[in-house]
Image (tube, rainbow, N blue to C red; front, side):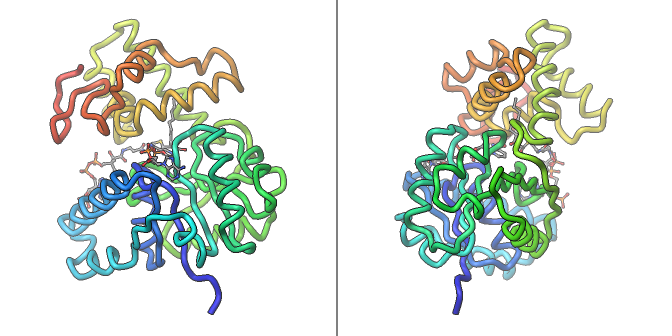
Length: 291
Ligand SMILES: CCCCCCC[C@H](O)CC(=O)SCCNC(=O)CCNC(=O)[C@H](O)C(C)(C)COP(=O)([O-])OP(=O)([O-])OC[C@H]1O[C@@H](n2cnc3c(N)ncnc32)[C@H](O)[C@@H]1OP(=O)([O-])[O-]
Ligand SMILES: NC(=O)c1ccc[n+]([C@@H]2O[C@H](COP(=O)([O-])OP(=O)(O)OC[C@H]3O[C@@H](n4cnc5c(N)ncnc54)[C@H](O)[C@@H]3O)[C@@H](O)[C@H]2O)c1
């Protein structure tokens, strides 16, 4: 029996959602995080999300239980990847960290396994160069919340083989997702676009053009976005936002410089929903009081 499993490395905001999305699509998933606490938190996030699907009628209780059965939390990298044909990395947005993780995955995963990074904007080519299998490395950029968002943006590194792209297109389709294929340029398509929008709105927030609530409301109701930029930033995670700004500003210059307000919130440890405070303050669920 060939390799049948899919491994997810990193059980945070995205890794937990990616594991859930794969399991909801019928795949057997092994989920690992270097922090046991984060692995537990990821499991709780998956259960909470499945409850929403049951409440909204998209899943029955039994189906929700079957999805959970398909996700195995694992406490070491080797056991996570040894039977995997696809390994998806979702660790923090740091190129040096991702290179280290990919070096380790290259050593431990089966030689024929595909290694995918969920990076928002970092160089897939640079990450692939940390392995001996660049033709099997690609960007598999999911969107938050992964179980709900329809797109996976596939990023072709300099040496990514066409067969690698096609196999990941197939599995994305099998789990009900749509894909686009983009070149390995900083920010790809989606992050470059959403960053331009969100950062400009953050600068309007800093210039006090309008109250944060009204900036979000204007974009939500005026442009029909499902979320305003500041509430979305709190959902994505201000730490991730800042990481992404660093990479994008280095590639494209000042237009992607991190607004001071974003930097200060991150320096203060306020990452948005995941810490309970960002542009807004959260006590369990979204409160309207801007911080
Ligand atoms: C400067 C740097 C900038 C870039 C940074 C990095 C970017 C990153 O790389 C890419 C991104 O992710 S970019 C970000 C890309 N992402 C975006 O742009 C997100 C934009 N926001 C949205 O699409 C919506 O606000 C949400 C779907 C988040 C919530 O929807 P809502 O209407 O506000 O609230 P609702 O009515 O409660 O939920 C509606 C339905 O969805 C269901 N549900 C919700 N969450 C769920 C979960 N976790 N689990 C399960 N189910 C969940 C819910 O049950 C309901 O189902 P029903 O059957 O209708 O009852
Ligand atoms: N947050 C978003 O909306 C979003 C959307 C798309 C893509 N991304 C990208 O996904 C990646 C993860 O982002 P996130 O928001 O899930 O971050 P997160 O901080 O919520 O989760 C990262 C997880 O990785 C774990 N981790 C750290 N080092 C590790 C290691 N060496 N091995 C295994 N696990 C390790 C951490 O314990 C943490 O649980 C980043 O590259 C980010 O840019 C984020």
